Length: 302
Image 1: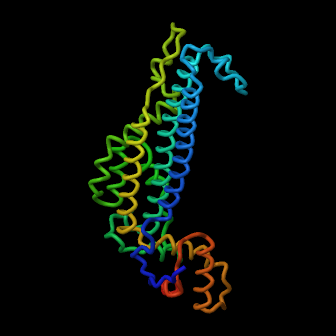
Image 2: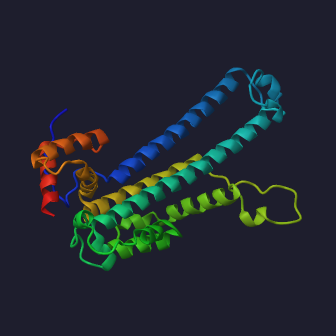
Image 3: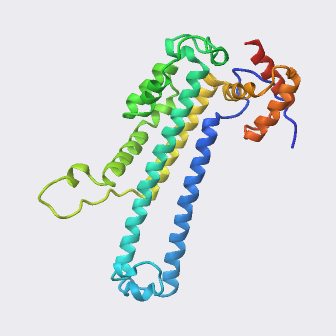
């Protein structure tokens, strides 16, 4: 592994993305592994049915002979296939719900980090005029109520969320505004699925009927389109906040938690070596001695 020659710069990020985005990326990978596992099983199931010459009118019990589930729920292969298509639609709705949850979890995290890093945004001060690392070290001033700002950026419709972000961080990149319609689609689908299993809530609550309301249809193509929009929105948000408000605060924040574990008589150079090992074990990326020494010196100067 090659050595890193990067130096520490408080407002210049060491990494290409925030740690919050790196977690978001892992959650997305987990989701798409699950999705692709389901799609692979779909492909091979239907291919096997075709190979064995199964017809839609065949009794399901004969075609799925030996199946460990209660195949008696289905009269024919077509009956089973209709049920499978309903399940596939349910998976698509679940995907949208997870996309929404992953995005909101990321947004809550990155907004918090941006405020802690650049707390001047809370009082309309110029960008980077108040170093959040100083506040982190000395605990100066009243504790800001971060939660109300995070809620404003992650709850409600996307017009209000984007407005809350803009009030905090200034004019947003145009790409964030361009994704408004898709983000609203994600929010609305998630809400309908979460509250009424993908059914029209009013229709589901009508009295005087005994039929179930139809479930909302969401195609795989829709899932892919909305998933890409959520990803691009998160990427653009991360780049914007990372360079304008966060810089290298993630590592500084990690050092703030590491610092109390060191004895007061540990020399600065040794503390830098210890921190290099610690952040490496944590998984925060390769950071060289020069970088770690610079961060330690910066912390001591606050």
